[in-house]
Image 1: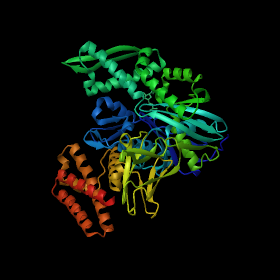
Image 2: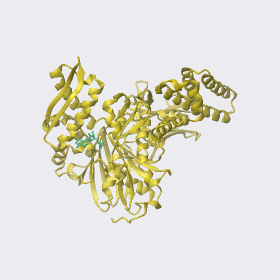
Image 3: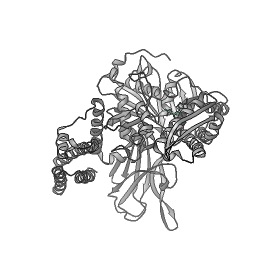
Image 4: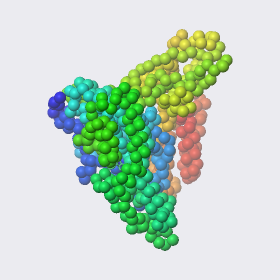
Length: 615
Ligand code: AMP
């Protein structure tokens, strides 16, 4: 279907972003087509690597990637694998959450938009693997917000890929299989395209399978070669390990084009005053046999997803390849063998997701409203609550009762009725889980809440209606309602960062802003409080590390004091006010006492109190 050419300036500023494990990219719709926006130097992919140099400056992209070898303790790659966890990442003297590192990558992409949109607020559609769970999706959304975007929607990567393809095939009726093998994740989805309506029928994947695994397998092989000749395991040396990783990835790339790759490092490390070298060759067949078990695993998942979609391989009209690792020729061979036809790869597999995200953005903004395309999605996991099952004369708890089943089309709302287990039971703890196991212990806990006020009655008399609403951003709202009294309680599922609510987010944002300004201006930007605090610690004569620490604490203290004061305005409870005042005084006292440790303790105590009172 032809697409009318429209002036992008007449639409709201909205872009599509592929926040990848290895590389990221940003695209927008211009004259009815998606385009990747390059950097000033013309690079379309941004390596998803962040480095904090010795002067406390943030470096993102290729330079950070180059720094992985020289400064492995100051750089982080593949942070996407940590999204949704509460793992902290140490870069030099500073610690970050995974979403903060991702926010720095997104901020770098935001810089690319300045020539098109200036400094105005830009909305973003950000992609995630279909198999990302709720916490991982939220962490991605937060990363976008921390970077200063308004996150319009989180969409699944295979959906995005199909959207990029669907733009030119909106009149067709087709079953499309999207095989997405990237740096850190594998995703496979069956998508149907019918008169412009694109529907994800089923999705499957492995969040820990990708090109990074192939690199590390090669690193092990190379380390074995070094050990044989020198008796040293180079993986134990941080720098040598980083060099091996770099060599492994390059050899892997070469093997996608050539039958053999030469691997050489004249000085991998120094051991007992002697240089340790690496000089070897690897043939493509050797490499393929190393990675074949992972490739076989991807095909097991392909078969599963076809079964879920109730389709055979011959019912698939097109196979779309997504992700850098699909450049490996063995992947093409296996696809051709299994489906009896070659895969399509006319769109660059590393850009197709960003381009598709831009198509979704264009549908939203109106820039592609004439394309005739509509995308729907499915819930990647089952979601439900913990229940008990009859056991002997009693009940055994810990069983999973799914309310929204995996692969249900979203947005969706589903309701189920539950009842009390004991006579006179007046409360129910609603524990919300995501997963496929019949025991909740093996699923992922999303949160819980207490529903009280159930009228006293014999067991099984009072009914509780539990409703789950799941939206297109993968955000779940769970509500429990006592049918007889209509009393209800809900939660929107919370994740790690949101537990500390607004104050934690604000602190994070302020810290990233300060780091970013530092990078742009090469001079730290100090607020008046920063200045005051810098004096307190006499940081002028101190090392930069201590100065950074002092400034960071100053930021935290400022934001926390503002939060405490705001809550004091709101509360009418005398005891609460007293606790808030006490926390405020402790922070002020620590500032005057010139003691960073006491200040850190005071801030922590205040955050705990804020969390208690806000929840
Ligand atoms: P993505 O997550 O889609 O950006 O894919 C990144 C992964 O693709 C990394 O593991 C890269 O090493 C890998 N990759 C990129 N180009 C090639 C290539 N020519 N051959 C094999 N793997 C590649």
